[in-house]
Length: 242
Image (cartoon, rainbow, N blue to C red; front, side):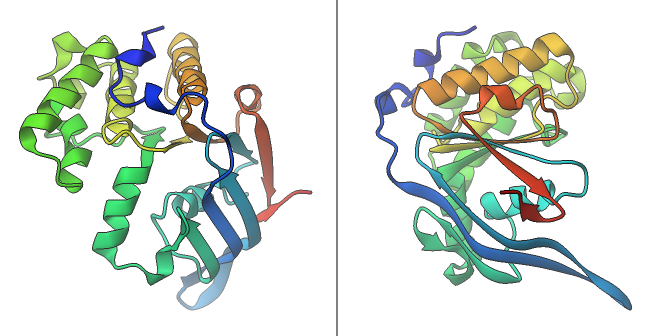
């Protein structure tokens, strides 16, 4: 495992006291209109608070609403009813540009499919989130290189995603998630496309990020992964099970 203190800005949160609610979902319903067919209600009256410094796993079978929960927690979508608050701000009351900036500074995303831009190099992919929050190109380049080097990818800076293995792509995605030193890491099935050894690396990494004071929210159907979390939320048919 790499020395995580190499990551700029992470160690400053060691010893954080969990008090501030960083993500709040208040009686959220999400409905998708299906044209002439009956609308599909995916989330049904969800209430959830995640406090700064927690490691929370949200789990449930296929069709339980996990993917929609990712969109709500990550402020990627707005609820049909109810409210989602990110750092105390109601996302429904924010402009798209203001929301994108807040999201970019607050949440680092790690996805199962990696979601790297295929035409960009590893270095450029990691620099991208910093451009969104108006970081200077020089500073973005230095930090992206530093992150990739810390993850053992110094020889892959100029490689595009199709020139990298699955494990290397996920490490680039991790570096990208840390680019803006976010307070929250939102990991959606982060080991789904990885072999067991690389998957263990990713989960141990998330555990160490939590130890350094990051808020970690893991979305998974894999019950073997929830052992890493300190709190488990179970979804079924769009509702949180008691």
